[in-house]
Image 1 (tube, rainbow over the protein chains, first blue to last red):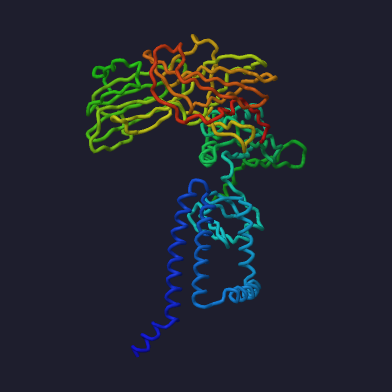
Image 2 (image 1 turned 180 degrees about the vertical axis):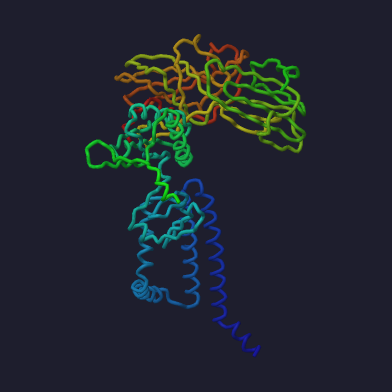
Length: 282
Length: 273
């Protein structure tokens, strides 16, 4: 038994396997080292996403070369292997159309760069920070700390909003004031609120748009700009400040009003409160 | 706080010089709209600050040392294993350019030049020991943000400041929370230059202090050569002569790049852009 084992170890097959294993181990080692070196060299020049991509490319290319050499060492003919891989690719392609579609969509996403790792995006009803852009999917962390995986195909097909693309953002506030209010006074009060709010940008100036005559209010849009990081703070603070300023200035924010008429043009429906007769009270 | 145990620190006008605070004492500082109380305890420093709105005539800087702790219990604690008694209040200019909006619109016709005296709000670094260990950096006047650029995509975030843009040096008030920059503008373009908004790149400027408490920066020169919002910016190496005998308090936050082009003048936004 031990003799057979020794013979086998001494044989060419054992030597081939040994050499192939060494090549594989060296491959893993070199690929890891090379990807670390790339990481160090390119960390300042590349974006997080491109760095991740370059690192992976270097790692898998080097590893692939070493695996091919190991296979060759084991006696496999690479030409035959490549041919087999071609046939296999067609078969797998038919079987895994969704994955292939995601893969190609991923390539388009990388080329188009609508967002990068670290950006905040909104896809459908999901809003979150991009954790990674991978071959098949994009991973998001939502603000309630959920991990969401969105297939690349979905991103290519649907509308994606990148919230962190530009340094400043606009908050559109729609509000209604009572019909009795003077629009110029309302505009002045809103402008003063924006001037006093430190988070609200002076430039671009706040925008005041009279939207029209609503059912029970004069509808107004007031748009203010903020630094991207301060957007939520501004959104919360300005609403409270506008309410307080309107209260101080005596400007009414009306709730829907309904007037009942008895049929005549201007006379309201008569309502009289009557005491019930004594018999009914008992 | 009792007024009897309060003592004015000698040489208060130059409030940026290092102060020695014994254990158990509190330094009360009033620098423009910012009020600070800094207390030294055993192995720790306590800092309390209150900022307010800028009012006319509140530009003086006063320091007072008194026994006892901070009034109230809203303060921050900074722990040290062995703290030094030396405290330095270091004024320096803001980390972003300040967009100056003169109270009245100013126009500079083609071929003309002018010098304006602009005062920019300062921030304050609280440093303990030598070399100074940073406790806090606080703006002496809270400024509103603003965007300065031709569109909402192109431009930079700045601070917004209102100024009288005074033409005469004698009219410029010295205030503890603002440093004065002489800004010389030369319009070499063929069109008049509206100076409704001017971006003063304060991160490139140093702060100099005079013995009378006045704070200055170097003179900056902006030359507009074409009909655009860009200007060539030149910053002198030394403080202006008329500032008198001054010493460097803090250097620039950023070094000026090559070429010296800056987006300096106002750009009008369209509604809803």
